[in-house]
View 1 (tube, rainbow, N blue to C red):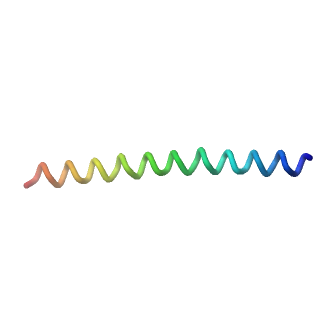
View 2 (cartoon, rainbow, N blue to C red):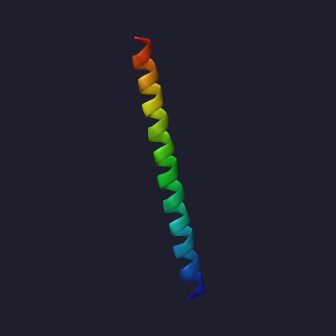
View 3 (cartoon, helix red, strand yellow):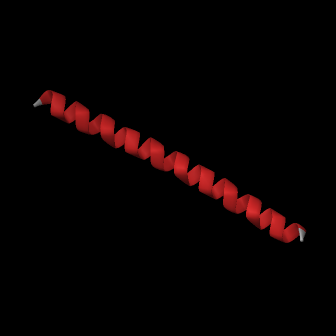
Length: 40
């Protein structure tokens, strides 16, 4: 039972971390796109 709980915890941590990285990546891409558009 404890193994299942720990596995679920790891899955949640991975999901939260993954979504945070994804948001940061999209924000970075948006920043780069706007910056490049501004220089044109």
